Image 1 (tube, protein in one colour):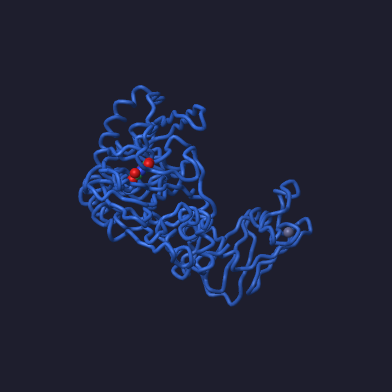
Image 2 (image 1 turned 135 degrees about the vertical axis):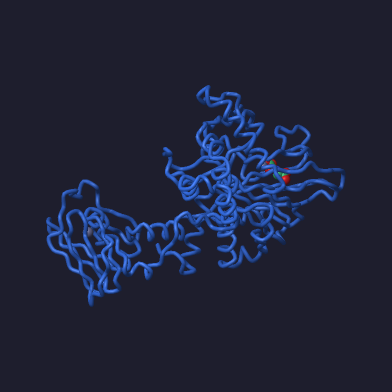
Length: 448
Ligand code: OGA
Ligand code: ZN
Ligand code: ZN
């Protein structure tokens, strides 16, 4: 039995190892450009007869609320049946003494809450649930508000997918052109719908192109400000990628830039990378290469579970040593190549040949296996099957998820009158998602 939570693909492998090949192919097919539907979203209607307790619901003319130990049970006329923990209800009382609707936050202090509180009386009508507590306090909850906070796993999954984070859809070279969305700069700046479309594409596929961008440093700045604000790093608020005489970074040479993620040596790794092409080489090269790290990770999980486990558990130390404002800096961050969250869900990819520290603070016996797994991963991410290639034109901004995608650049010609020049800027995911949720709220897709 695995020590890790078993997402669908692992579970399927354990169910039937013998038919792995057929299953693997099917899974990979499903993975490409399909949202990570690790759990299905089930509409409320489809649950009318199957309740949390498994008891078939009967049609009730009006809502019925009862107390069942530590839980309040709520039967709705539609047939929906919900259970809410007593303490959660008290904690989330919406009265003005407990919740300030202007600040949109809980104002009752923790020490004013009695964790042994009991409902003394409980009533439900067509609009609300009313609770009179054992200490005399009264609470009322709109039924719609309660339904929106349902504890049914399918409803929680729906909320997580629609409000918390949109599910990712993996891609490879084959379907890259079909998932790549292009947005006109002025549309995104002037229309909420296009703005939302762009951020949704970023959340789902991790890549988009903006075109007809004015060739100024303000263009990117305006885009960052529209989200909320750009992320400042030791490269500044913006950085210019072009040949520099005293290049302190391989990016500022005309050489090939190996596949990498930016600033993987930071715990708070910049989320979204924007590369505004101001001048592109008219000669050969200068193309950007992109691989979907999320797709690769999900694929490896199925095709080579051992390599996947190694790359997602063995800690690697990423580092960057350099100078900023005349002072030396030394960045270090220790995390696996594939970093998952506590629940085994993909969080970020870390990859860079130059910025991988020689301090490898992993158990000695894991190192050989790690090198083998890293080699498999590297071959996959460079394979033409997985890698997309795109040469941006002046006015285009290549925007990609720096937490998820691995990117690189082909070597290029650079000569007088033909000097490649990109302007780079980051925006963090927290800000982008905070903006996206509001855009989705305004479009009626999300409730706050
Ligand atoms: C970088 C980078 C891409 C390019 O500077 O980190 O990825 O096209 N540049 O030059
Ligand atoms: Zn209250
Ligand atoms: Zn880069």
